[in-house]
Length: 400
Ligand SMILES: Cc1cc2nc3c(=O)[nH]c(=O)nc-3n(C[C@H](O)[C@H](O)[C@H](O)COP(=O)(O)O)c2cc1C
Image 1 (tube, rainbow, N blue to C red):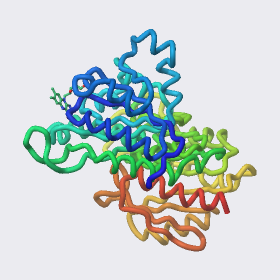
Image 2 (cartoon, rainbow, N blue to C red):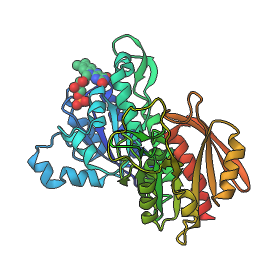
Image 3 (cartoon, rainbow, N blue to C red):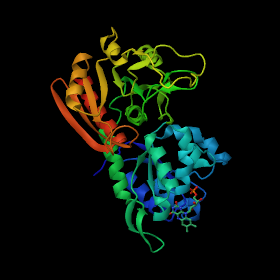
Image 4 (cartoon, protein in one colour):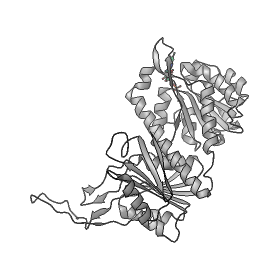
């Protein structure tokens, strides 16, 4: 049977028709060995009473931020700290929207914002609500931050319709949780990782810059996954519009030179993962004023930027594992292996950019990770899953 022995799970129940299944979910979580406490939204209380959850969890159930007696027993901040994992099930469209945008206007959303515990959501709703672009965008934001999403599944819905929107079965939710807890629980605890992510912008004048199309999603997914697995993570981020993953310390930079300084200052570390798309060249000089449209052609003189990856690998405080990324449009393996050798890297994760469903801006990716003695193909898969697979390879090397 799936095991969650000793795991403290805070189950947040929202106001959907599937709320009644959350009672069974508590029973299954406890059968798997978890300690369960339940918090309910106001909506959830229209579907199921607190007495049912109290009976199956054996613990008092929280329903409001403004409950003086409950706050005196275990305040919401302590409850948020108590949890090893937060599970929102069923997660309504409404609560998913609030979580995506950082609302804290009731007990459940406040708990979710006040915790650093990993979060899992199991959505359940009408299939049109599920497929609505607003819900899709909210889910994408949550996934980007490392939130685990289970289901929903296809099947008959409450309104007599059919489609994607049914809550995953309680036993399946428990099985997925147990698998992820067992697979990676704290396996990076005690390690310090420095990750760079995103593009760099090299200024030409006060309004223009030379940049690239990196979205930062891969590096942010790696930082989120590493923090979830217990590592201390320092994320050096180029200009991107991504939320900082839970438990990650972030330093924002703009140019390749700033990225270099921030990364070197963040050493020593056990591993450096250079996922940023750092500019190779920058304008020799930044014009003090906007460059005027005065001639038919304009020649820019570009000079080499610092090679942070090579510097980290040659540094006296070289991390035990230095990982580079190679975004290539052709001859991927030859270029990646060349870079591995030349820069003295331990691993290089190569991807082909310029193809659909992979590379920059995409949520999915496919990587081939080269080392001196081999190659491993990862994906195609969502970047958050690839992040865990890449971290598995790094963890293997750090353990060796
Ligand atoms: C009978 C009924 C069933 C509902 N079922 C769902 C549902 O399955 N999923 C959902 O996202 N919203 C559902 N709603 C709408 C939510 O209850 C509503 O958006 C509410 O604001 C959710 O609040 P909460 O997320 O704080 O619990 C339902 C509403 C009613 C009246």
